Image 1 (cartoon, rainbow over the protein chains, first blue to last red):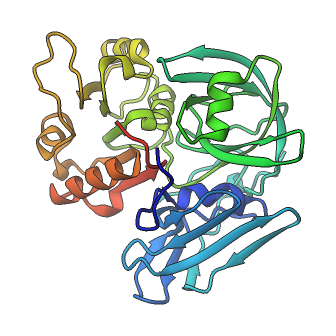
Image 2 (image 1 turned 120 degrees about the vertical axis):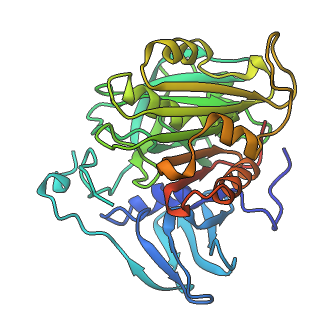
Length: 102
Length: 253
């Protein structure tokens, strides 16, 4: 299969779950981000994602404007969320959800 | 939407950890299931995935995501890997990895494309090619014990490309409330009444659920397949909020 062309998003936000889980202690796939460009709110899991590890671009599923850029450097995670004007993150209210990491 | 406990908690911060290959079994000519042992595995939900990282002797690293294929089983996880032409990680896993080999795994991750046995309400699963993997984890988690009815529509190129073929056929007869329909895009088996062709709205009407029963729809496969199916479902009146999708790349049935 040919490399993905610029016009075709081949992944979605689900593929960002791993890199984001390295630095964030909450579930971000179910978080809803508002696009700075068109104002639509979409769950991170539904972002259109271009590229592959270590670098990704996430675009709005409605207007295709860039919502985020993520690059995993050997010693850091670069995260540009400038296309998202607000992010609504669910916070667990049930103590059962607050189990400690093994 | 109600939240339920995610194994390991919603504190999902994950580190890479070593995973030893303990078993591999062929599923089709190009797909294999690999079972890894990871001490201290926290458990996972059906639909979640892991990232697998390989490191070359010169330090070069490559990582890719793979859906978990089976429910939590102690320290063991299973993934099913389809060989892809440009897949530097998938090629190694599909063809070269041997029992005893150690890779790095991060996960489980992804709290959106998941199904939990306590979830109620009918479920429609639509798979294209190896997009069956996370949906199979849901079917296995359900395991015939749940009153939640499942309908699976599974599009493949040819009969030989059916992953989990025997188990799906067995479960279709033994797991009450599970219906399985195969669609073929290139070659049909003897006795198949539907002719070859990509999935259509008629297929979703015939083998899925009417929109008014409000099923939760999980669609997984190559990007073009996922886009097509989710558009068809919306066109049939399904609420976009009830359609969960996972795109895994350009290759397709």
